[in-house]
Length: 461
Image (cartoon, rainbow, N blue to C red; front, side, top):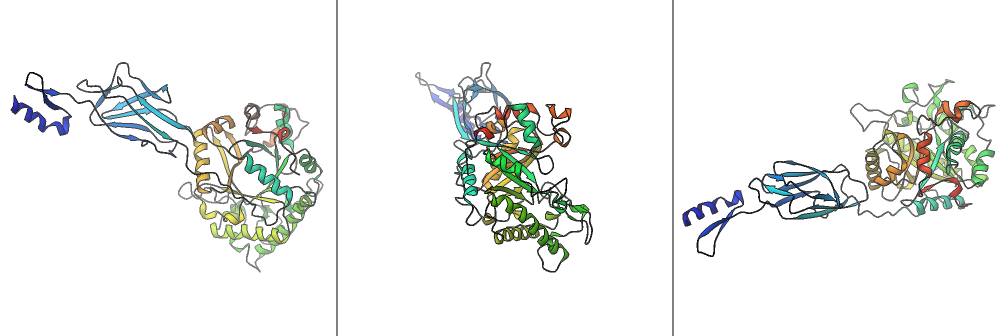
């Protein structure tokens, strides 16, 4: 009997069995239960990716008990077994603590020995504190610009501000459509200086700011972007902003003596005169120029920039951004809050902390709130001292589901539906359908206690 026990002891390294002597003096075999060797995510880990799988690896092949009780945050979950691995099927949410519990009747080995109860914890929360830059990058900013920036900082991570885009350029048609279907105006109205080469004209004049003044006087915030149209080639009267429609080179835009630089200087002079009108009326401007510069360069092989301002690469783009920034500083435009739009993985295009107040992200055609939250977290981790916002969006998960997943943007702005809102007097203006965010999407948004609409805005003058 002793020889048998010694032989059996020799295989305990593999089998997990051992032997001991019973009260009668004879040696007997003792069965050892399956032991946990590792867990993924690791116990106590923080900042866990939402794409992570929960896997418990045991010391030997396992099976499930007939009445297994396996829970995540006290809720029973579906599980599967692959040899010695227990896979837990659950969807992780951002900014959440997790506890995994496996009861003593849940896991057993092929010899029918039950594993002991086991539990571990992890978190999708990060340890990165939110420490936003204390001051605007604009030196000696206007009081109103400071007030808006402080308001954005105070609410960041706590509430999200609603916004709408003008229909093409210079109106609040989208805001009116939102008001019609929800009973509330969004807090931010955004505009586009896309038609700069043609203003002033009877159909577009950026010096007409009465409706913007009214918006600001009703405590609404003002934002503007610029689809910067340039001549298709030197001397042309045809204007484009897509890179494949113009020979205009961003790499020449800041070089004295080039025809591109002459265009840039003339355009900056013109647009600064329009922004100065807002400055003189004490209206601060959330300013988002040169957006989406990297295009899809970093998304896949053979990706490319869409717009001319990004088509000659990161260095040319950054030089242009800083050139504009310095020009506006010389023009004493102290009412600007600068927004740079990331395409993700494009840090080479980032102008630098001294030239950017807010990081924007544009998201389209993504109904997966967790995926969107992953983007938010990635951007926040990349630029921890900057406010992060959903600067454009269309056909995405509801704001309530994004917020629950951890995408706590500073503000969000759906793009405009030209056919739906180009004319307030047409019948289709009354319809709830929308190319990018329909009435139900907006109703869900404004019904959330953490979504700020214009009626909830303080006086920031």
